[in-house]
Length: 314
Image (cartoon, rainbow, N blue to C red; front, side):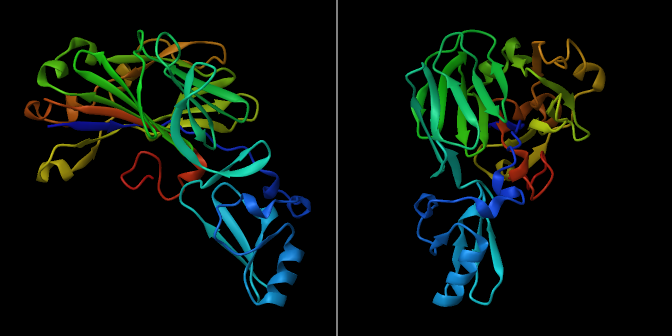
C-alpha cells in the first residue's frame, strides 16, 4: 500500500496594474492572450463601443489578469470569466500561456517554461532543492544531503533514491510546486531517517509562522502580507482498492514537538523545517508499508474555493 502526504507553501501574487484605477490606460497586445476568444481592445470604453457595433463580446485587454478575462458585451455590460488556476503569466512585459514543462537551464538549474512565480529545482548536488520567488521575496528549501541529477518528465523532476528505495518527485505548477516522497518498500519505510525529515528553510525578509489550520505562512516583514503559505499536510492511500479512495487530513503533531528546534522567524536566519512522517498517527501499522509523502506549494490568491489544507483545496 502507499500513502500520500500533501502540504503547501504558496506565493501571493503582487497586485497588477489592472487592479488599480489606472488600469484602463494600459495598452495590451490582443495576440498575447490564451487565444481562440473574442477580439481584444485596451480600454473599457473602446471595448464597449466595439461590442455595441459588432454585436459581439470584446475583451477589455487592460483588465486581463493571470486567471481572469473581462469582456464588454453588446448590451453595455462587463462580463468576467474567472479561471480556477492561472492560465497566463507576464514574460518580458507580455502575456504568455503558462508552461509547466521542465528543462535544464544555462544557469545549471531545472525550471518550467513560464509560471506565475519564479521557480527553480535543483539539477543535483548541493544546490537548494527548490527556489520560489514572488514580489521580490524568495523562499528556498534544501534537502539534507546531496541530490542526484533528476530525471525530467514533463512537469515532474524525479530524484531517485534520495534514501534507499525512496524517490523524491518535484512537480512544477502554474503558481507553485508539488513534492512527493515515494517510499517503495516496507524496508524503506522502516528507515530511521524517515522518522523525521528536516528540510533547510530560507525565507529572507519574511517571518515564518504557524497558522491556525496547522500550516505555515511566510509574511513580508515590511508589507505584513503573506507571500508564501503551506497548508497542513494531508494523506491518502494511493494503492489500488477501496481503501485507496480514502484521503485523510493528518492530525497536526503535538505543539511541544512542533516547536522543537529553532523556528525560522528572523529574515536572515536559516533554520530546519521539520517534516514529521504522517503515517505514524494516521494509519495502523499494516498500512505503513509503502507510503508516499509530499507537499504542494502554490499561490494563496488562486486557492479561493476552500481553505488551504482541506479536502476541496485546489
